[in-house]
Image 1 (cartoon, chains in turn red, orange):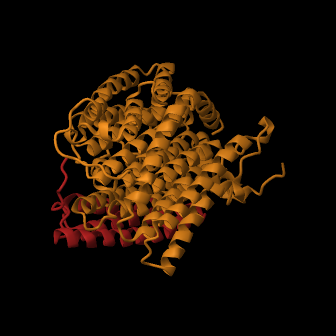
Image 2 (cartoon, helix red, strand yellow; image 1 turned 135 degrees about the vertical axis):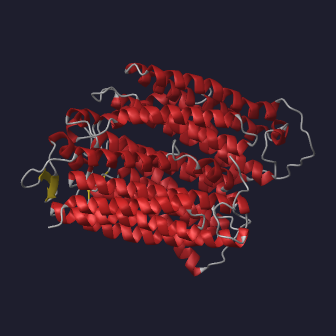
Image 3 (cartoon, helix red, strand yellow; image 1 turned 45 degrees about the vertical axis):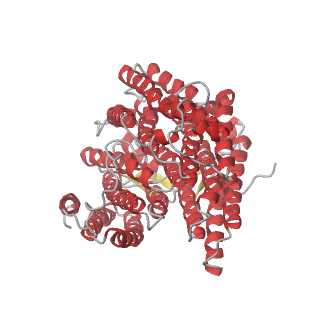
Length: 100
Length: 520
């Protein structure tokens, strides 16, 4: 069996790629994709350790995680759509009517 | 009295959920309905039923063990949900805030389309908050948290032709999505380290130092008794703190709050800053008090000392929130930053704890009481802003000049809210801050006590700017207030009365909160 540490490294790498994408990209759609990567990094952990621990808790959580990620994207696409209609762009740095 | 079936313990959540489904059903029958009284009526009835049942359960002794003369604690779905006194306490907060917000929204949305969706989303989010307060496992907590968040994103961006609102929704969504991904990853690490997601199972894994599993509903050690990898657990706990910090608008995930509260429709700002914050805190209280007991955590290798983390977060949140609020030029944005500051005060509930876990019950109960008072005074303040937006009064402090002459009742209510938020004994805010102060003294956390005092004094300065503008300054421009919306007025005045009544009634509230925190 592949040792559990390998899965942890893989999921940490996927998580960091997602985080990197969020911090560097300005396109809202790529931002969404990066969030998906981060959520799926969690799913990798859940499924891998579900096998490791020999119980199904992790696999069930992974199913919930996928469903929630889909719901989140649905809301996100809706908000990006109204963003495009108002600002004629999906660049997240263009929306600056308020400043802190 | 006959014993009710245990699923009845979820009656508050069921009432809110049912109301949202009825709203969605009515919307699918008549999509273009503008029958605001009916829609708002369904929502108000749903939230009042939820409020009444939660209060009834608290008085009836649900969540108190039968050995202490209570009705026992309903544990549902294999320990995934637990309706104890703390869950009921937070259901009361959520249901009252929801009732105020939907009542006020009656006037606010009456000229907009998609009203049924608006009310349905509010009720769905409130359902998620009540479920979150009863969640007893990281899995249900995550699902409930998303049920709170997803409708809120849509609600913030509800005025979809308003550029500010859309921008606020976008920022709230982006930061929310990232922080829920961080939370999910943190939960996956906790699962990797402990083998369970139920709070009691995680606590057993930490205290025994072996990975656990759940067989037939009871927690037991995995065969071979593998040890809990403390470093993985520590990183997981740190990420859970991050997820909680987002929901409660605490540093370092507070950036969304001023934007979202300023851009959102004002009733929604009140809803998010009061109810959603309370829901975030109930998760924090339960996770850190039950699943990650600090005494065991430090005794078995010290994966992470979350008390220190919360002390740093509490102090940073108090200072950043209050200092930023003091420099604002717009009233709504000032309230948004003050809401960040108040998250810092409530974080004392998890920070004023000794290294062995002493003082946790008292500090959590102080935090709970503050959240209850805050639920009324802060919602009320945001609803007053909604009233001002309804009248077309501007957003800056100067625009409020002389408002007290034209709308004395509403301005008197606003004065009660603001002074109570600052911690003057005109509302319950004085006592709840005093309890938080006492919690810091109990464990000798001088830095927290000092931060609380300094920030309360500072907050009096910027809150009284609004009071001064309303009552003392002369109006600068022409303004005509020709209508006095009934729903908004009822909500604002009702919130003011409850805020005031919490001065004599605070003892009862804090007793219930203390008992709830002890029973955790």
